[in-house]
Length: 251
Ligand code: PGA
Image (cartoon, rainbow, N blue to C red; front, side, top):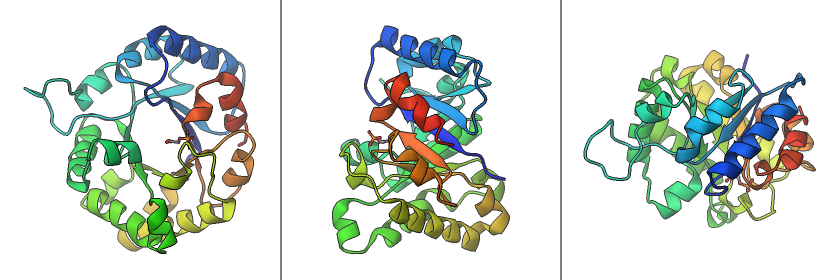
């Protein structure tokens, strides 16, 4: 059966020392605790190797926030999936709405990134979600379905089974405006139905679908209590142990 996952997305915050300190503190907080979900932290690239060394990776998975759409070579400034894997990180966040909007990542580019992540043994946390105008025009189901289809539906059932999805309505990211538990459940159930139609019930039932967008200690419990919400992708509230731990413990 699918896993519950609480994943932090630090975005472009914290210098190396601050990042290692946060990871160390989280590791300490989780040390003697049994929690009911997998915990992941998504750090900037340059933090990865140090953070992997600072935590017990059997308790905290480490994620990159992006990877290149090429395997290697003359791509100045890019970071390959194989390099991420070589740090000991095991996840990569792909298709975040900030990458799609500010760095023009298209469905085709994301398809390549997903293939490279999988080829290097990384688990993609693949983000999807509509912008406000699309929701207001009642196009949100269509948009999310198309994001999944266009980047992921060429995968075999076996490979799709390695993907974690994160539904992040763009209007809820960093705005303090969370989707209601009912809105999240409605979309997550729709996503799962879409997966059933393509890959069958077993694959769909085994896919973790996280919710992201202003998820915090006060709304996590209600969001996670929905049958199709299998955890969260947490931005702002992952930047402090005091804010992140209660979300982990919401399971
Ligand atoms: P937020 O970000 O929790 O700060 O809204 C979530 C995300 O972008 O993954």
